[in-house]
Image 1: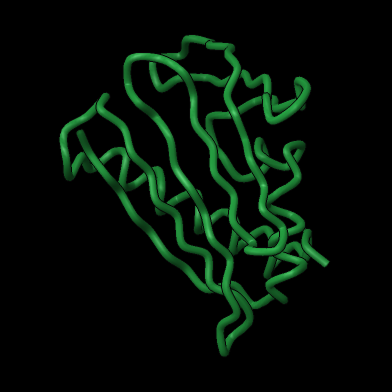
Image 2: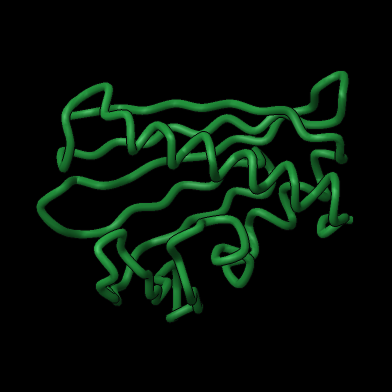
Length: 135
């Protein structure tokens, strides 16, 4: 069982940043391997992704948004106990984004998973600050 955490600050209002992050259609914009994400009714989301080995996978996950708490939780059924959550909070420089991820697929401290999490947050910051996608 492995848990991963990453945090970044983004020069944007917490409300605008959360609105961008909580829109299912934006998931492929900031998750590098994800190619599509579409609502599938209720809290279900259909996704497709390209894996590092070049293979293509499709599946269904759950995605829950708490707008009042600016909290997003997600996960997928299966043997890896994959789930996570994200919180947006006010910060003196705009907003802070903290992500927690849990999986049994890898060992604690797995460099590739941590790198992927850090890269996702870097992508979010770049999209919002440099390209102005939130707001």
